[in-house]
Length: 577
Image: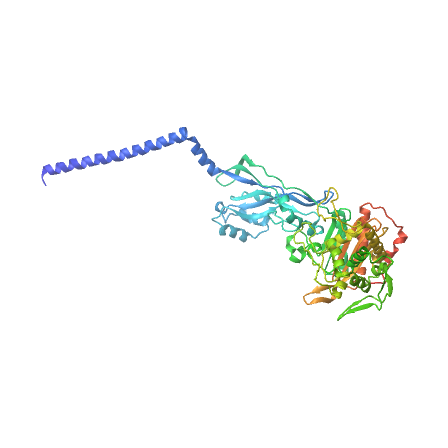
């Protein structure tokens, strides 16, 4: 290659290097100018961008829990309240599973150390897991004092039930998120449940709240609920029902108490019950409010209502007589029996002696439609409108043509089904002079408008008959101390998978007091008493007597009788209604 060519190449290479250097320098200068312009723009012209980006990384919207409304009895005694508690949660991405402080945390939380460390490892990619919910604030503070990175706490509310198992079936309970699951907690969940609020908070890079910035929306607390229940009467009823179920080794029991002038439920208890503050023993069988959800054939307590239909028809009066000889009636293969042959008896004796033969003869004379019509007017076979979840309506037959045996059994409470609340409502009509009030588990400021379904004259006559049941009939052991009363005993076969159980009965008593001016109606039903007695007059009637004695005194009802006049309470009945 010539010297001239080599010189040209050196010049070309030098020119390329100079051009390349200039190009690279120009690019760097251009980038620097763009960056400088952007910095000036962000810090001087468009400051909002940086502020927004900072807010996105540090400002969060945090929920403000709403306080659930309180449930009280009619006098303001708390039945369900929400108390503040603490919930511990963690951000596993910020935690070290081998942190030695986790051992102390596990000890305080009553967890195994291995379990806690393994949870953090299992959810290492998550930013939120619960460690323990609904803790006592003092215990949560002890854990937080360990200053474990990634462990946080927040305030929540926990439902507490001061009366425990005594009001469990009426009040119900909530789940861990305070949403109603049973009872009035479920029925009025929307009313009791508040509306959560929200606020803006400033958090650091570890998710810890540095300060509250602003309120987005305030939390709206839930509404309070005042029940018709009188907690004093509820405790009284629960104590007596539990005692009789235990004493007679029964499978369960129910007691319902109504205010006859308003239709308010003053007490409603069941056995077996449960403690809503301790969920470890919950079972479906214990959760049912049997006074509303469970149906049964009422038996003899329907006889006074069938008698009311007879008196209302005008075809019978108090002086009418019925021949019950020879003490039984046959309908094909079906036989109706009395405890003994009462012969010719009047209307009052039919009820006092609980004569199946006597009431069935009246029913066959009246016809099934007449009796069914009154049953329906008194609220049987239809929803009570009380608004309780799981309410059973019951069965009130209405065949196109009544067979004589169907008319007969209808008159003494077989062939239909009711719940305890419906039976109490029917007796409320007899007690208050013939007015059917809508039932209520909420406290009423004034008596509701009722519907007249029976005349005062007829109901007064029926109350006179019910008095004789307690004074010298099948319900003598229902006599309250110092007060007059009236009611009707019943002993019905329980129904099993294969039909009526030969050896299992439901003992029932439905009644009212004081009988001349009733204030309270109470229905007691005991399921399958196993120890000794099982008749309604022997098992359920004494519960009625004890409950009514104390309840009327608590309600400041003036005693009517001298102590010597109430010795019938200790007298065993010769009849077994």
